[in-house]
Image 1 (cartoon, rainbow, N blue to C red):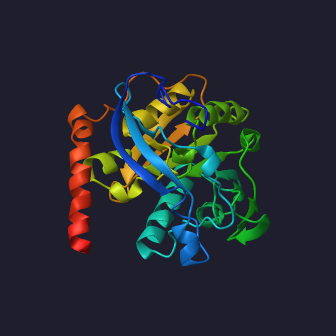
Image 2: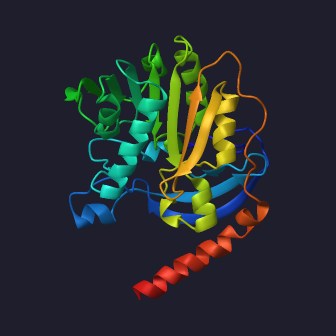
Length: 295
């Protein structure tokens, strides 16, 4: 997937049965990076989107992704907390996790925490959180009866050792090797019995079925379907507890535990072939519709 490394198999299941979906050339490599001027924005680095899908697990990936052109630093900004509707969703999600897993006086780790808004919600009852994000400065702050520490570097799997709860929202789809992270994370989390993982990603089925095409960007390596997300965690050794679409089906979340046995067989069905085969034409018509509106 990266420069010099051909992409010839599914990122999730390893199958070589891949089919092309759509291609979009010459797009900005980071759509959430703030620019200081119009000229800087116009000259932003560009790359290609070339989506392929797996005939086995249904996963969609950008085969043209190049990690060398994607760097997350202090000018990367994708917070949604200015939206009252999103804040309500985050509040409800955090409350559900706190109540379901008895998160009180626990150690919580978040991968890709941004400025720590969601981690702060999780830690308010009296938890102690550590968030990892290279786009943020290192620092500590209070969170209700708890506390959080943001560590301004990339997460390393050893950081999850001894945690009671590991959270990762809208990061997994950015990784060129998601299975490597999940397998190593399972091994690191297994040092503490009962540890829970909560992952949230954009819902690839929403993009495919309801033409949420604004989510097709170069920095998204993966587009997870329910079938491929559950497959990823099961194959990494996790026991999948729950998975559900949320936020008007735009998001897909999964809760999993580290257990002695991997999840039993049985996966959500992958989307029907017709959704993939018709996507190119439906995508083109959606673009044409927007061009007519703008004109």
